[in-house]
Image (cartoon, rainbow, N blue to C red; front, side, top):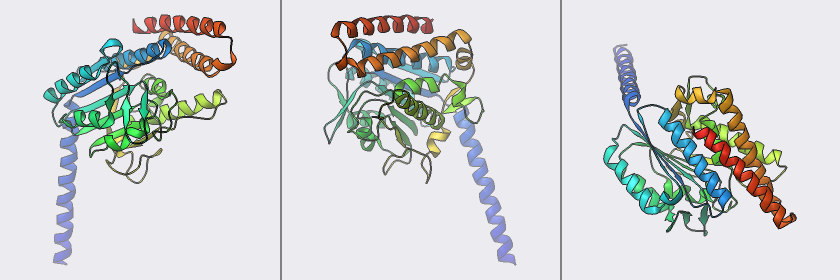
Length: 321
């Protein structure tokens, strides 16, 4: 009987200690900072350059509107170079602490030769291993890399590390077509519908689920076979997965990306909602044109593409106000 009482007392002490530890961690993260770096890589064509830059600007605004605890950096256009990214990550490595969160979002094109993944930048590209090494120097224990590029699944193994969650727009390096996942990743942080549990915040897991469903719906609407299948890994080892389970998804579910406040006021603004819907419609129109380019007269293709790009630029300018 005495042994049982001692055992029960020990269990109660451990439970109290665990609860206290969780309270401390929660309190620490309530005051911790989040460092976010968004990079829009080399588009290669005007429509891709415009789209990638627009996505990066949107994300930068979202995170800057999120509050003083968010430190957002965006690299696009001529600033999207390997040297600029190295300097930005070096700055964060000096400023961030172990209790802060770090998020790196890669937008653009990627390539995979069967062995090595590269993120396409202005000038020299960076490999997944080089990017991972730069992130390793950042002391933040909780990290997230969101690679929305083509062939991004080929980077997953190099990015893996304990405490680092990885999201890739493609399940492997062999899915090499341009992706649409980035578009819906941005939208997930603007649309309150992504907040499934209605707690006033969107986690990385909620954003992934939202963007994945929207991406699938896009291919269904185009009556095309999907050429991208987003995956994630947040346990630091093993193969990426498409759904939470067996330990996968726990870190993503605790990484809050945005808390509704300024961001929600934008999403709930009817005028902004119309512009966001218009932007998505234009991006889909551009995708449709590109898929049907081979069957179109070249002059007609250029005319329609130019008109759509000009309208997209106008809508983006309105959203940036």
